[in-house]
Image 1: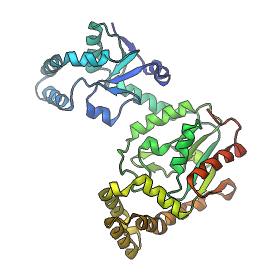
Image 2: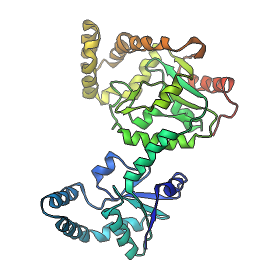
Image 3: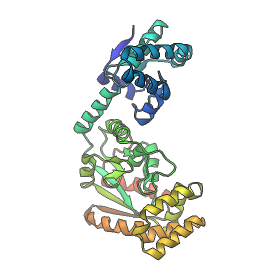
Image 4: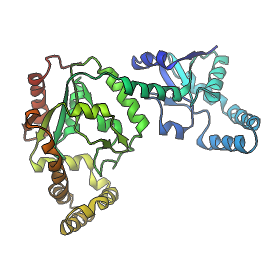
Length: 350
């Protein structure tokens, strides 16, 4: 017989990589939001779920159940085979811990495949995430990486995170680079996904001597940052990265690859065109169309992004700024490493 498992019981097993989570909802539900690290073995396809929903509302619950049984019976061998291929402990879940996960667990039990079933489904998990956000304990100190657009802040943080530093990659969690062009080449995460990723990362870092993250506004792409991070940002030490404009242009070109995303870049630019002096804006548009990307980026930096940044930068007290003037991003990474122990704890690597 399958066993029920609560969210509280599941989390430590999940975070310690002792449990495989399997979402049996439809692909469209899974893509919208699921528990991080889970895989999707759908009970119904998107079309089948829609059909059954229509039957449920227009005919009856019994008719919907009968149609559901008819659909799953034709693909049961392949469905079971996918679960057999997964080793170790497994937990299945659906939206509320209802029919799809219960039926899946029962069918697997009949085939001597033991699984756990998440009590309350993903709705219970979402409730747990919200409770965590309301009560999370942050490390007492934070270092915030700031600087003009193109100074490689995200690349610096991602490099440090790979080396074990206590970094929170907000743009990575949002799957958005933070600017009007930030969605290009990516599928931005929604608020639910961002919240879940943030909670689990903060739980990993709850005993760290400090945390590091990039200076962001209250929104990154589709998501809103929690107030506690914005409050912590206001009390943090700022590491201000300064790079030559040539390096910044090259970094932006490497990151956004406008030659692969010309139409998306042009569409994004048109959203801010009216905010730029008309002759310059027309020149940027022409450069994007003619693939003169270096000049387009230079003009965007000089006449839009740098001006916007300078309106915000004076809000940071000089006593909380540490200027890091370097020739390139690799040098910036090394300087940041040296600066952190000087202004923070000796215990850096986690």
